[in-house]
Length: 103
Image (cartoon, rainbow, N blue to C red; front, side):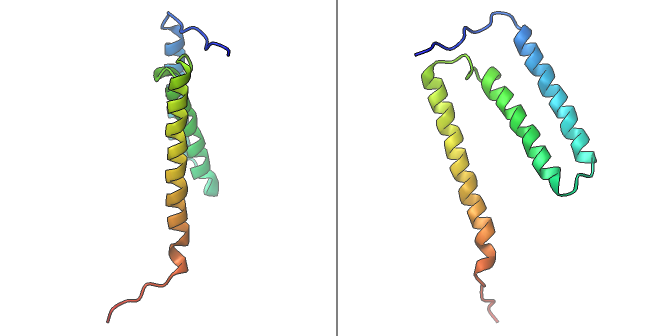
């Protein structure tokens, strides 16, 4: 099994990731003021996913962590997907049933 890459000793990589996060924050702000119509939410979620990935990989040390760290990070992401799917299922099916209004 391949070993994960050695963790960098300099703060240079973390500084570049930080600058990337700042750039993505500026892009997020620009998208908030731009009228993209139906795609505003999609673009905002894509940018948020990129920022989450950077934080997860570098600042939470998943990229340079051992296999068990990656397993638990993946398990957390898996349960987040389950939570999102169940919530989406609830929201989508709310119109299927009429709720009687008491008189």
